[in-house]
Length: 75
Image 1 (tube, rainbow, N blue to C red):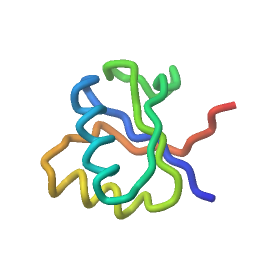
Image 2: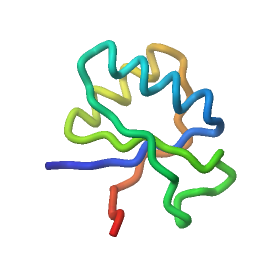
Image 3: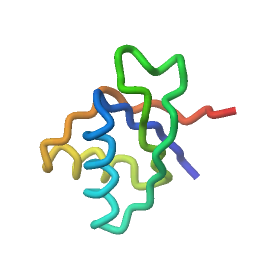
Image 4: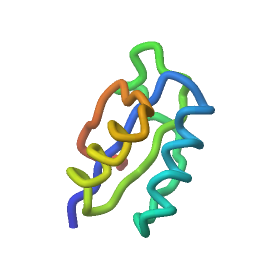
């Protein structure tokens, strides 16, 4: 199971991303951005399980900017 953290610049983009992916059947969870991934982000990210590449393409098509996609090592 591949898990990734999608980092956004604002909470609004995080919420829009979650909704865009939800409409396409991709389950996500809004989480606090791990400190080592923050780099000026709003502090909230999406945790995406599997379907990572598909999620990136959907967000690009919807013009929802993603600051970065990182491995989810949330221990």
